[in-house]
Length: 58
Image 1 (cartoon, rainbow, N blue to C red):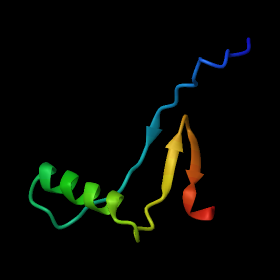
Image 2 (cartoon, one colour):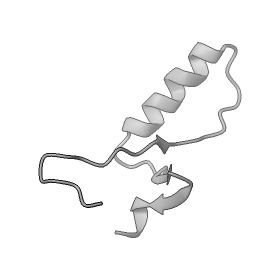
Image 3 (cartoon, one colour):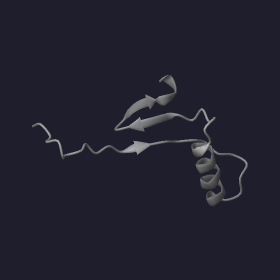
């Protein structure tokens, strides 16, 4: 079945990172967010519907 021009695909995208040396889950989330937004970060690999996509290879 083909999608029409107005139908968009839906994907579940995950990004994981190990965070250490913080005291609370909130601090871990804040640090992960800062790393994700840092333009010089090398955290550029995502899992999309079980397939790993590395945007650093572009």
